Image: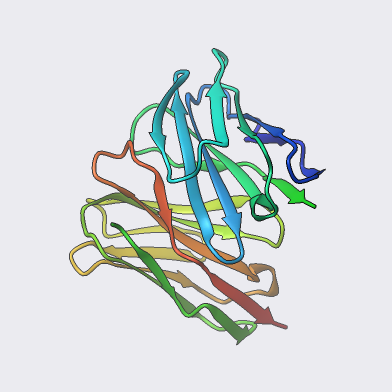
Length: 113
Length: 113
């Protein structure tokens, strides 16, 4: 059974540009969550999608957005990139039922220059 | 607001030693608690999931305990090996279970051969 797949693994972007990251959850999982990891702040929650609807949202500016498709794949978009957006972006999927484990992908390392 | 603290931030031990990693959380109204391992630059690997009604979970050389009333969890690693070197993260999910994971900053473990 394939795990959570994130693409691309690495990205270098210039300030002011926008970027789109992709996450394919484990087959059958309908919940996809996104987290940002930085050395200073640790892991911070961005948003969660369940059956194409945003279920939860963290405390990030509107430049950060996401969506989920009917096949449960999810994308997150960051517009007008800032240097502080440089981070490891992690995606997690969960199956149906609140007691299930969260499984994470390998992450996308975004560097903004 | 839930806060998760992990002590110590870093730990170095000789191979073969048994060790305990600590995790504390401020609000005992949790749904479950999950321990993860993260290798440098990589994603998170789920180690153990403990439901709020459980006291402990075991997987191989790992044992995690949960004392919800005191807001504490410990991860016990038996007979440590150099391959156990990684950052260990604790995360709690609150209330109904349809809420984001709240992470600690992690404990960076080095096992010296």
